[in-house]
Length: 578
Image (cartoon, rainbow, N blue to C red; front, side, top):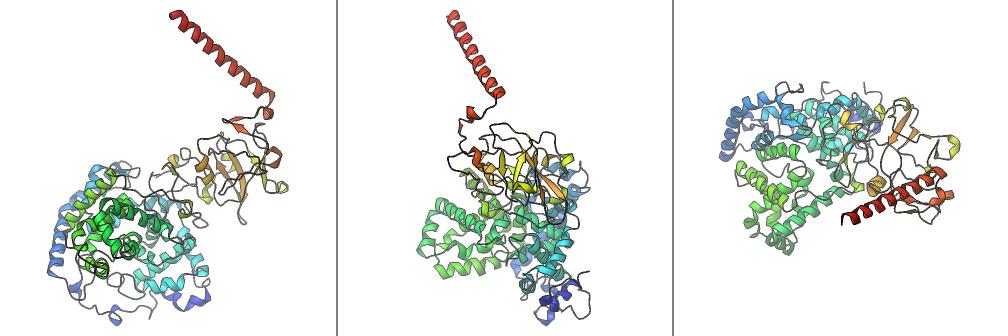
């Protein structure tokens, strides 16, 4: 289905990923890796060329026994999870886990249940059902236009090659990984593809067999406010710098001696913590511990990264204080992945204490995301992420393909604006109060915004705190919310050759009236005051009287008169009582 729409410069290898069953495509691992002994494979499918150590075998045996002991509890919990009244939905409601579920996840999800629980924690089924056929369309577009295919091909060949799942070149999982990364490079064009994303998608494909489910799991990890990985991988890595800054703040406050030691030896955070925050400790800690951390990460979000980073430094602080820069670098990058030197259960217990300590010191969450860290657009047929405004509340965006037509608009949306080609890009209201600007200059926008209460709460499968179909709260509204209420507006925009869709907004927006000819909001969609009303001035949120109609002016006078009379009567009654 893709053969006739492939970029010419990648035709030489693209067919091997699109047709993995073709003869001659698959290359056995024995040709390029010295892994031939199945006995050297651990419980999780990872190969150890030198064999498992005695400690690793003891740890593996422990996890096997624990998984067997917990099977019945987890089987009972996730059975019939599709039903609304299932035990799972009672324990994980609206994106929040019950105390019992949280306790079980911290103990570790049995390996055989991760393929079911991880998609449930990420609400993959919900977002997939709302975006049917989007993955196929994005993949088709990627094969014909993505500029990242060559780099993806290189990285796929070195992703988890020490596992049974990705051991064969052009094997089923490698092909699925290539297709997922290619499709996402087009779907999230701001990020495209960045090195490090292959490990995230590869880990999902180990436990999520369906590649479309893995695609939406990666999207949730990138765009959900809980994980904010989009900000980590977008150009210039602003989210990564944000996490590094907060990490250094934690170290300065809670580990001051170690902080001075790092400063003395020029030990930069980026030297040892890069993969901690970009890949959630993949390739930096033992596999058994990393998987347990991912269980908690999918539940708790990015605060797990900060707490675990602090936990590592705290547990090894005495050892680190005896090392120089080269020794610390080797310890973080090479030694910890072989042996963490502490039992996994002890590490998780210490992690709980770190989470509580950071919460007590108000250091458990980093600063809010800046505007350049938020995704602006996700594909032509996208389901957009949940965004967080400055107050911490969630604001969803609607899909382009499911916007309401003008006849289906809520009755409270007014005034209605018409978009005429002769208006020079300005929307003119059919009716409006006299004190409002007669025209609003509107720049072309990608997506409109809707009310959380009217759209998000009514959408099936909506889970606050997890990525669902959502809308942007514009920067202008975030900056001026709670100031002056302007009635909601509705405008029509045309995208490509498709039909016109109606975008609705009921945000609180303050129009800054100044002496200049124009006053613009700093971000799109921008609202500017027309030159004809540039002299309008607002004082204490009350419009200037010269712009009032007689009826409004009369109501204003009567209201003040009634208030003064009531105040006078109150004073008289008070004197009589005295």
